[in-house]
Amino acid sequence: MGKETNAYENEKSIERLNTMERILSLIERYDVIILHRHKNPDGDALGSQIGLKQIILENYPGKKVYMAGDAAGRYSFMEDSVMDEVPDEVYENALAVILDCSAEHLISDDRYKKAGAVCRLDHHLFCGALAPVEYVDSSFESCCGLITHLCMEKGLQVNRAAAAALYTGMVTDSGRFRYDATNARTMRCAAFLLEKGIDTEKMYRSLYANDFEQMLLRARYTMKIQFTAHHVAYIYTTLQEMQESRADEFAISRGMVSVMNDIRGVDIWVNFTETERGVLCELRSGAYNINPIAVKYGGGGHQKASGATVPDKETAMQMLKDLDKMVEENVC
Image (cartoon, rainbow, N blue to C red; front, side, top):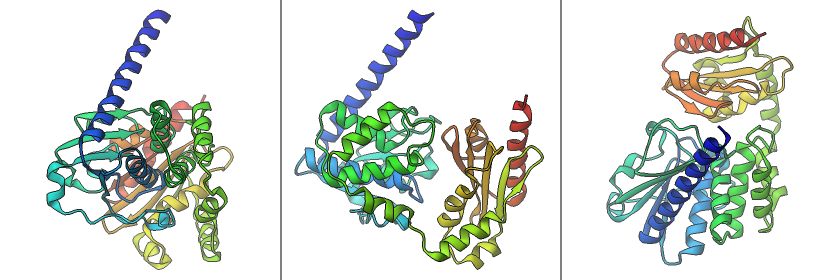
């Protein structure tokens, strides 16, 4: 059995290596490269996009590299985070690279389909192919970590700007190196980036400094926490509450899920936020694989951190029942 497992792992390693080589070959072949990632970007989506852009420019002089997608939002402090205006005709003879995205409807700009070639680099759980050439490895804590590892393996030069972007993505997607996807490889990649001379103090201040209004908002949301019968913690924000808060969707949906992170005895928590286009659902767990429930409702992500958008509160409450049932069925 051990020999069979080793043979399988060796085969998968060779397959991943070959895919890496094919992606690098595409980057070398195309003079114009357009980088895409998921909508409503987090630190990892932007970090992988900015980081790969800088790496390509550093290692393949003369190429034109564009970044496509919606605005950086709260991550606009990152260097080179402004997206490009990419004319339709540029796609015809370009390579489109999809980063940090597991589902077609989440990709930041669907014009990638017009490109001469398409490939993908991602670390989410595999939900289906998005491109003819893909390197997807969910063992990485972040897409930025995957790209950093690729650079280390292939001897690619990483400048300070790329290192800062990649490190930001690693920090945010690993929960400051707390989540269980963090391992020795993560730390080796982080050390490699730190050696490039990035200003971590400035980065952390930009990421985690709160003004007084944000602190008050977190306090209000802490008071909104409720629990199901089997101790799933949740917060539900109506559209009216959302509008009255005067905060953006990201600050409420992604930002407030973290107020439930460290409640003793809570293994699953979820933040529901009503918007004009549906209810945003941010699912988190410290013990269970909640990804299948997110996928069931049209979302995706990771085993212990996933998201979805559902049409209404009724559907959101059905999702909550599914999460509660998961805990009930796993309690000894």
